[in-house]
Length: 404
Image (cartoon, rainbow, N blue to C red; front, top):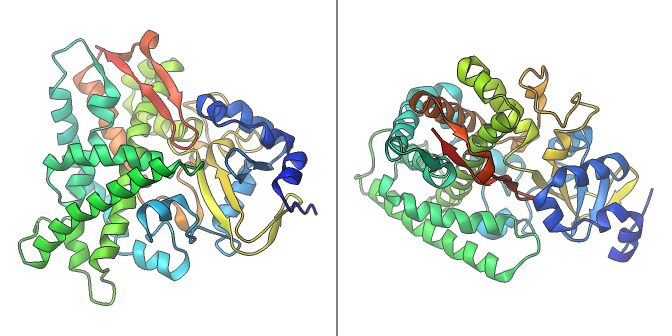
């Protein structure tokens, strides 16, 4: 067992981790993570001030263990930005927050209540550029569709889209602010305060009997039985993490799937056989997942691969590295539409904090891409102007120009 009392000894124990640079991870994390997975599967990375865990079995084990590894700590970036919510508490408190929301994110509810509206939003967005020869997809489509979907889910006005998108950008920066830049933190906190003010106006309307009667999530939360009902503040805090997750994951999943298909000569195959789209989305989550990691904090002194982890240490489970572990996935660096076990990816995490919106994210990506291919049959990505995936926490193409 190795005891590492300070950063200097940690750096000498983990030379690969000590050499990791953030820009390197943002540009192309896969070679770095592959080297760590092979030689330092639990590695201290000073640039992030945390341990990285990179093997599939280890990542799965940590995420399923809510005794030794927890999210419920004020040291977490989601807590610092959004306060206490379902992703910053564990055990009974986590279930109390998650349970009232869960029915809205199950496949039957999504099919009955949201899929038609998602398709309507997709068509409306495409209407704005269908008569042109090209479009930058991120700004005009993939970044807008999930915002409109979240507004519809919560019963907010579509006119709030621009504000939600602006806040999202500051949230994304704050939740990947591992260097603890105070300006980034302050911007995220200001946006959170503004979000609270907006949502409270809707909650006040519901409280006064003038809320949306059409089955919105906010109205349902307010109408929950007394023993399950969350306070307005609890509703707002959980809405923050749901909005952020529901925007960031879907925006990236749409673009990442198109990017994966276009750069692996598979777009035409899916265009001709739409039954392959679900497989394409699943393999994209494995090969180029929107979220690269899941952070946990050590609650009980423990050991992993001979490394002693102490209470308060931060452990980052690298989902993207686990999803390319050759012990789990054959030829893992290849995008393979026919991969038999792609569904075993951990792109939405596993264990108690498995992504609440995983079914909704997949539904939105499927509807979005099907609608694009239906409306724009010749659509393809302009490879000369494609700005490839970027980011070490949230990863997707910076820009993607489509021609049609």
